[in-house]
Length: 149
Image: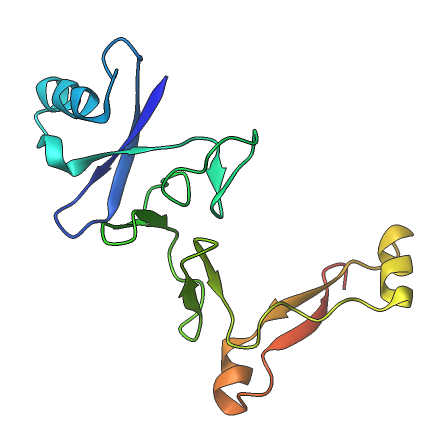
């Protein structure tokens, strides 16, 4: 089965359709098939890979177009990537991983004590991004949060 994202002229994903390989032996064949069925212009149907996320193919194959398209994602023709919506205003695109990254990088690691509490289910510690904290002081942003509190 082949998957195709229906995009707007503004390159926003509106829906994703599945087409049998018989009707989508190539991307162009799938686009033509979908145009005939739905009346949406062929050039606004872009093939996507169900098994690709963060520029990694979950079955070990070759990643295709960065991420599996989802409603509200944006098609980046220049980089051939489907981008999920930007999670925070300060985050930027990392083309190599087809992911958004914080200006401070990955969240800090949990301490051994926090990991033990998570394992014991007494707490559920994670770091969450706080855009307001980052905008007030660009050396902060990752905030330790207990989801069980």
